Image 1 (cartoon, rainbow, N blue to C red):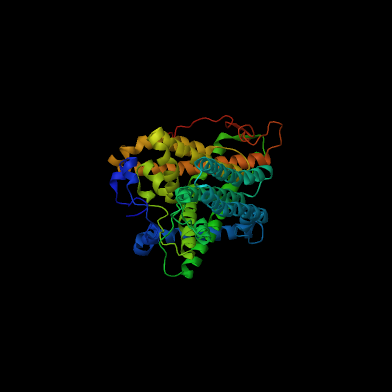
Image 2 (cartoon, rainbow, N blue to C red; image 1 turned 90 degrees about the horizontal axis):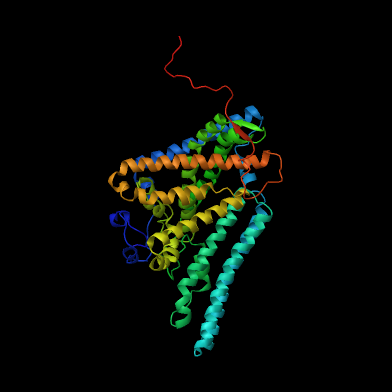
Length: 466
């Protein structure tokens, strides 16, 4: 049995109950990532991988030619990468603070157990001490979130650096929560040993959010695999830089410099973002959930590499949300959904899970971009939540049709994300300052003014003039 759902389990795909999910084993096992297996054993998938590599090379050549013709020098996306990860020293300081707070949890755990052994014969003191410990963990989590959020809100950090700081912030929060829940009972019974400090540190960096005393380990580190995956991560960063420079900047970099813009220009820009948006979406998935996690798993000899499942074949949104990121899904399931469901009901606990996830994503984007523009929250927490019941049964009856519709939603949704966030970013950069400017009020709604093309009329496409 495995920690996560086997891919062939159709019972869960058709809506298993919470009790059925709870009966599954919580043991990790040696497994490779689905794409690792597919690329190694399927010539068809390997060919698709090669196609993406060729697209990267074509974009590289296109960028080199453009830089030579327009600027007389070769840039190959370095400017965008350096700008995106700017002020890396400040980002490193914030990350080190987050790591220090996470590490501080362990001595706090030891102190709690030591004092509990002294007062264990006094029930009143034990209750007070337990309450104090819970408040202490909550305070530690608040400190871990509050300081980076305050710092980033006061002075904006570059997009890439800020995204790393905020994502690591939430990762450490979830890690501390997992250890606290796992050690809660053993702290009081005195029978089970606490994790060693080395194992606690191992868990902080292991590619999982579920704490276990032991994980399946590989025999050796294949450094060639580590280097290959890290090179993939680097290549995808430049991949997105090329997409930004060749497809976003030409359409949106001047947005807001003129007081008016034609609606047709905006619509054309949005459609131009569809293909680069979905390519960036797929590259982001591969970069983080496959290449990055596999690189760390290999370095840490972490044997269970099932970080995601074959979400690209699904026809139901509930299956997609579970399979897309099994690491975060498992944490949300074990620490939010299952504890709340007996008291609130399955529907309410599912809604709370979506709300927590949507808010976390929005915090990352708001602090990274430097403004609040909840497009992703509306798509993810609004449209995505609505599609859960709509595709629950229909997706099973018409899998091909609904898989096509899901991919259509991915294309349109990512095109909107790329275009709307770019519009807001450049509107705040190019539009003149105003007294009404606010972190929470979109600037692109008022500047520039979107107008229809003067004297525009619809022409009959069948009225051919020779």
